[in-house]
Image (cartoon, rainbow, N blue to C red; front, top):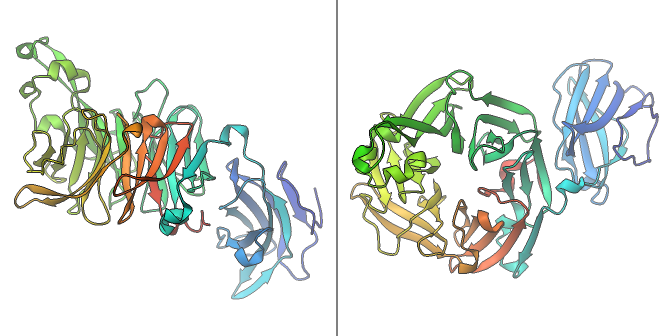
Length: 469
């Protein structure tokens, strides 16, 4: 036990205990400091008080001074209190003081000190950025962060800044983070899968907050969660889980050159509550006959290959498919197919909007349907944003960016607006994420050791106070 430590800066090698030398009249009896959830970028301070109190800590990097301080989580009452400090940089000296409040009266301890660990080797040098000119980067991009995932076990979800600095991470043993998504509830929801499961497929659902605490962990087999899930995981306005699942149908495919009882694997939508109870389910077989597809025998093991699912502004589903080059809109109540956009669809499009393998379909901040097109037929990846006129079943191009041919990305990927003139594009197979302007000029590039499925942009406002500049 270490007592009365005032100016000594201690590395967090072991749990450190401060006790027995607090301000006269202070109710703090003991302070312990260590790692939260064994994470190098989260510090936990455990405090014991002699009477009931609200407790929190203020902390700051010594190099910035107390004028740039952050607040820990708050323990509302009790005699034992666990406070978590986020926004920690590696190998950095910090100072903190503990604050107690009782019936409006606030007391502060003296200042204590610690030094965070350097990142372990397996977390170092994961990301490397390059840019053309710093002044060309939008201010909101420089202030924001990016969510990236590692799909192989052990799985990792990372949040990095534009300089490639790791600002947050969470690791899971034995599985990979196949798909991750940042929710409106300041949490990360993910599909977990083992290495022998296909690229974006998994059998577990994990939701964690930015403290790294588990909010939800569902495994295949619990309740109505029977299917393998893949490519997308979201929450709806009722806090229910929405995902793409595998749907199978045994069919007589002899008329297409197949067998009498072939299994056709398609895709579905599964909505569950947080206990794994099925709320709503739909499949492509509800609206389409595989026998109408001349290529069904060739593709029967992965007939449509749905790869993204999102909500339109009217809360109906939008679902993109890689194999047929289409985006569908599906009624979220009755499952009716409302329209098909893309090759062979029923929405009229300009000739320039000839996308073929869409990914990461969503409604962007400007109200347009946005997608990343792998561009396999052209060998050039592109970004499209379309204004949809559902009344007249027509679409017009709001944004079209041709990415440089040298970063052509034939599988996976995403594109999200940063502001009205720049787009963050993930080129998964190239192991890079780029910031492009409307002319397709690359302003910034992030090289990653791992091939991310997508890269989501997180404005600083949605992750404060857990992560901030």
